[in-house]
Amino acid sequence: MKEQRTHNALRLVLAVAATMMLWSPKVAAQQKVEFGDSMFVTTMAPVVVTPNGEDPALYILGLVAKRAKENARTLEYDATVSSRMGCKDMKLLLNALSGTTRFFMKIAMKMAGMWSLIDYFTGNREVKVAVECDVHGKGKKVAVERQQIMDASPDMNEKQVNALFKVTSFNPFTALYGDDRRWHPKEAKGFGFKVVGALEEDGHVVDVLTGKKGRTKVTVFVVEDVWGIKRVEYTHPMGTGILEAKNVGHDIYLPSSYRMKPNYTGLPADSLQKLIRKELAGDEKIKRRGRKIMQRVDKQLDKHPEMSPGLSFSYRVDYSNVRK
Image 1 (cartoon, helix red, strand yellow):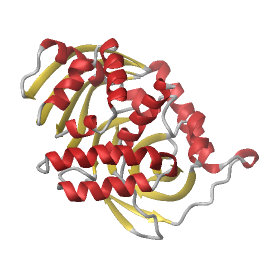
Image 2: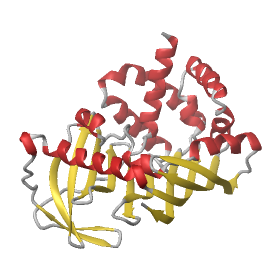
Image 3: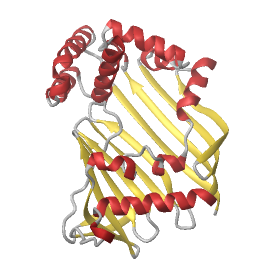
Image 4: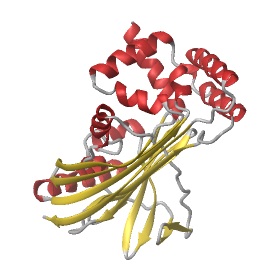
């Protein structure tokens, strides 16, 4: 029972902290949309004819999974992943947990060798870290060849560095085509994906699919014919996050960048309190437990009105020696 309460409380705080979520554009007839250096022209939602009347969205996602499986047999590449993360006043969120939850979380994190890292991010008022990682990818597997702290403020000890390397190891292929991705056919039914439109880029048709579960919305952009994922967006009332992908060669799309930004970053105490209250009130399942969370948040903000929690995370991936 205590473990279940701990799990529920952690889920709540993670929801308040805003996991990885993102902005999603509305698709309308002949509307121009800019994505970075590219210009897309949207069209009305296409009529997708599928074999045996199969659901169009699941049919497209099935083709993506099939092509990914084929690519995984022969794909090989080298990549350098540059990650940046930062946070400010994260102790506020830790203190929003009950004493019992913190106790069990500390035990679990120590067993996983991660408590030193939690202590680093919550024990300092402001943290900025940059990590670089070289990997050699072969299909769905990667071998980490080098990991290096490029910048850390404040300084990290060896234990904290080792813990950080555990969470910054990155597999570009499974990040986009892993079986646990929300747009993978095994998971997609729970999000009710629909084909909502199509975009045109450099002569390629890009299908736009959206799915939603609770208040989390996922938008996936799929390049037809090569059946690669070009972009994934998560949207949630608490924040935004965008995963971009590019053709790295042989018509294979792999992640090129990711960025996330919670909506609460940089808010003053009173605005933060209003936002958290609105978030907690929007979910009946957590409203009752949320009152206790909010009481602890209020107590911390009354003690430290200067607190302004912030969280950021991004990465960039550069590829070389891509072969198939």
